[in-house]
Length: 345
Image (cartoon, rainbow, N blue to C red; front, side, top):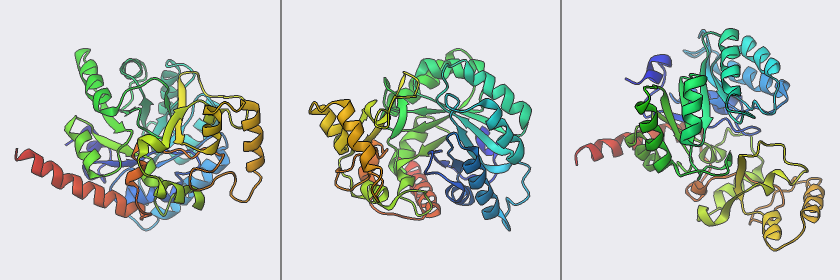
């Protein structure tokens, strides 16, 4: 039995977790994933009013279930330390006592220890999970912040991550070896390009205690996602060709506020195509901001939009929109069968 199973007795293994995608992973999605014996996460940005709203929705969804009277709210909430004041996050943590506080994108690696200490004081029952994108960062985080879990994000992931990185197939085992070599014990979660039972089985075979899927849950009924974005995810094929990593996506609205080590993976939208063709950043920004005023908010199918659509290289495996609970159950059970068959070799 894994350490995570001891901490969260409702989960079934292999553990499937939805990524805390800001703007997209709300209370209904997170609660639905937890109710399917996975682990749900709510994403947040700067407006804690929105975060509170989504936590309230999750709490209402748990009413009448086994989770209704849990000491901690049986899900996690993600915070971006580089963009958010610690005090604002702590007020939410004290109020809702989420089972997990997920931290990602601190200005400096040392900041995670500061946040972890403060969160544990505010809500002793909450566990700390931190997202990392390299062996070195995982080692520093494990030593200083002492999280219960580290999510290793491979370069195939959609959305924001380390500009310089490795795929999860090498990142996970090398990090596990490095942690073991210095005697640090922490549960490792795998993310980046994992979309179905095959990815889950592979990650578990490499030692992951669970998998985090983002792009796959963008194609769920419970995701907070614009219909055009969801349609773009489902229609996309050949993910390594129709997505790309670039800092451009964070420059479309204006100056890039993300720490220097991060960029983001999006579908190859029209803004990026023009950038590669040599159109000036100023002109691209102008067209982008004009497109935001349209009914579709700058998103279009067929890779013709100007606003970023965050997606990983596994996007071609998201073939239809399904309920989040169905996704969790199918992926988990199919992965169990694959692992059982593999054990016979």
